[in-house]
Image (cartoon, rainbow, N blue to C red; front, side):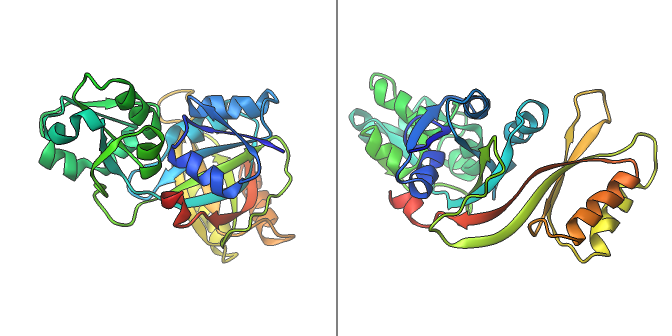
Length: 289
């Protein structure tokens, strides 16, 4: 039985994804995303599952930054799960949720429900928590406070909360991608629908060389390699210094992808492969679990 570190506590969206992908393994809840990765680095867990991107709010920068700057881990799989946000309140306050003095949740969840909050809680402060489940847990433990949480239906059941409003996210299509991280390069497979192969790399450009990013993209274009995503993040070495994280929409082959890497290195770029892996869909069970 493997140990899987995930962003906890129990009943987070990450927990739901892990429960379906690893039904027979031990799940270890962690307080933060870096702690999940550190558990694997320190040998306390074999794998970590952390959020990387939400369809409405974009990239989870904490995951990218810690993976690049601090954690020597490999991406060995990707899980994609539907996200449904609900407004939860303690049963003692079920009839007065509109009078709530604070809204608690993860910052991404709060942003995903901006329209609802603007309409129903205009001027009411939002308090950021480490996860949606942490917000639900806090509400369950403080019935004396008239507060609400944004979280999923499993959190409502786990912490005995009343669902005041269901599906309060701004847009119907709301999905999150999660990375499965390991110290080894061993490929994982799941009994889940497969979404295709992907290779994630980090590219650092040489300084003071105009047109290098254009040349980097050209190495993929003329090889007909599709890029699923490209994004820049600060190198933390000074203003204007960035690295680029790139998702190539296929796994590493014998010729084309390594050839692109070699061409980029010939341009003076530093190329780091974070992983070559398959993606899987968690599916509707993520909300109904």
